[in-house]
Image (tube, rainbow, N blue to C red; front, top):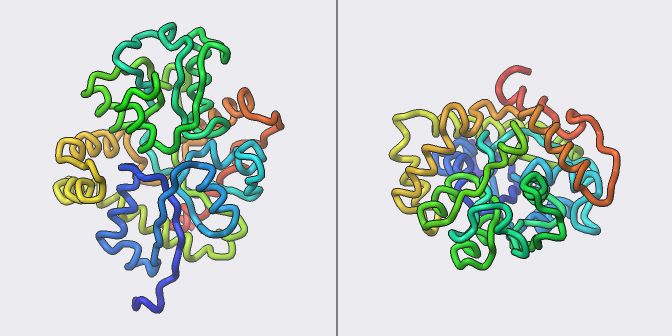
Length: 313
């Protein structure tokens, strides 16, 4: 397919290693093979990402499932609403995030009076963190949550000891642990399953461009299959190292072992965890503001695009 025949998709993502399937789809030509030209932009935080999506400056986003619910229901940043936001495919590990704290803090009680970093105060893993802190015996008066940006910004801030703690997924939790930071708790102590990052879009745009969306998802499935193939491991590690500023060989190997573990890594099928979505909603009903009645889990995802991409429809 020639360049003129390709359909352009604008994708907005947070920087980080969980973009590995996107990198592979670009590097191995899977997007091009499916006739899709993807323009990738990075976001400093969820408010910018969802403002961009709401204004039509992006077509697709890779974001937390909680953001899909929050910005659809008016519980995200003030003035930012995407009332037909819909999740299309899961793109995240099935492992739960870890609450990493500075080396001197080894108990929840040690967080009293401390400031912890979150991406956004009202959405995303901030709600998971609030639930964990409550389970650890702390009230909202015992700590301060501060908006510190996406995972890259929070990671760098933690290395400077600017915050007492924050939630991190692999491989950043392991990298912090290697630097002496303490793995205080896992979100698995609060939730058995949780749907993390997903591909999302506006339902109206996705329906109007169904063939493009399906081919985009097909390319991501191609990339996941490529990443899980043992023969491609060396090339995958080299790609990680090339794409990330601090992508050392050791960091790449650690990330690969976690992100593409057959049991707890990225779901190769892209399937959304329905029970995990239900847990997202339960947390949002507890901590979301302003309070509102949420819909059933199936209202927030549409599996027909992924089914077509997988050849099931």
